[in-house]
Image (cartoon, rainbow, N blue to C red):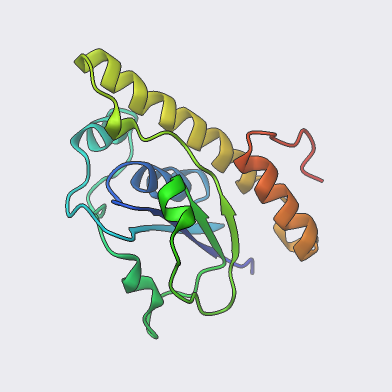
Length: 170
């Protein structure tokens, strides 16, 4: 039996980048990973461009919602193995205590929800964010997590976040 790793994607509003991360990880890492997302100051709604993109590329969006990271610091919350911040603001904030000392990394991306312009420009920004997150998540999901020592794994996670995607996953 293989372990299923819990992954939490954090962003301030939990309406776009972290939601995309949750959806991508649950699709890419099915069986190996279970993803969640949350925000320090949740927007309350998932960004409609994020939802439209996820639907367009075939993701199930029925369970996606904007929620506080406080839900995941409760005693009965799922125990996280990995926590990734995907916005600089959330990375700079003091996070709640995560039981079990999960591995953390910052995978910062520009906020597609902040883009102003035409419908096409906004859609392109969301598509580019999705592409970059999917690349990072695919690289992460292919790592031999069980065979890496903690320091090596942390180094790989940080490399992924810097877009210095390792060529080898050995």
